[in-house]
Image (tube, rainbow, N blue to C red; front, side):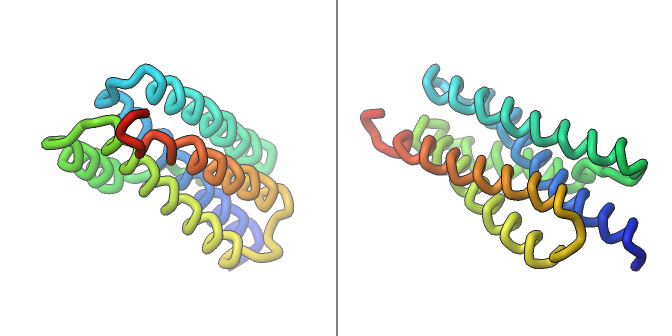
Length: 150
C-alpha cells in the first residue's frame, strides 16, 4: 500500500467514525422529548459537523477523491438499531444510554484507529485527537441524563 492509500484509509476511518455519530444523532434526536437533551445533541452534532468539514478540507487539500461516508448497509443497521432500541422505551434515560453506548464505541474506534495508523499523518492525528476529546466531553455531558430526575 503506497503512502497516498494509507492516508486515504486513515482519513476514511476518521470520517466514517464522525459520520456515524452525526447519523446517530440525526436519527435519535427525533425520539428525544427533553428540550435539554435535544439541545445537547444538537450541540454535539454541530461539533461533529465541524470535524467532518476538517476531514473534507484535508481531502480537498491532499487531492483525495476517495473520502467515503458509511455505506447503505451500515446506515440501515444504525437506523434499525436505534428504532428497535427505542420502540418500547424512548425515555430521556434510554436515549442518553444509547448515545453513550455509541460514544463509547467512538472512543474505542479512535484509539484503535490511532494505533492502526501510526506515523501516517500528523494532521490526521490532530483531527483524530479532536474527535477523541469531543467524544470524552460528550460522555461527561450525557451521563447526567441517565438520572431519572434529570
